[in-house]
Image (cartoon, rainbow, N blue to C red):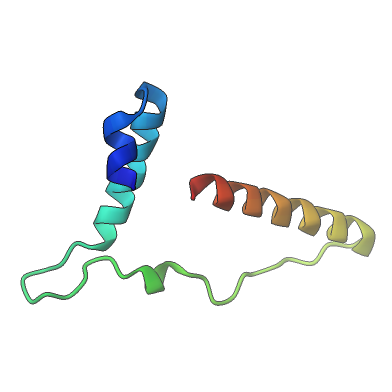
Length: 78
C-alpha cells in the first residue's frame, strides 16, 4: 500500500509516503546471521516516567492535553 502511494501521489504525499516506507523498511533490515538489526519490540516504552506537579487540577489538564497530542500524532503517522 505504501509502495502504491509513493508511485501515484503528488509530491507532498509522495515524500511523506517515501519517509514512511524508509522507516518501515528499516525494521526489516537483517544482519549476516539473519537477525533483525532494528527490533520494533525494543522501541516500545514499558514505563512512562511522570513528574508530579504541586496542583492536582493542573496536572490532570496537562496529562489530558499530552494524551490528546500523543494520540493525534500517532494517528497522523499511520
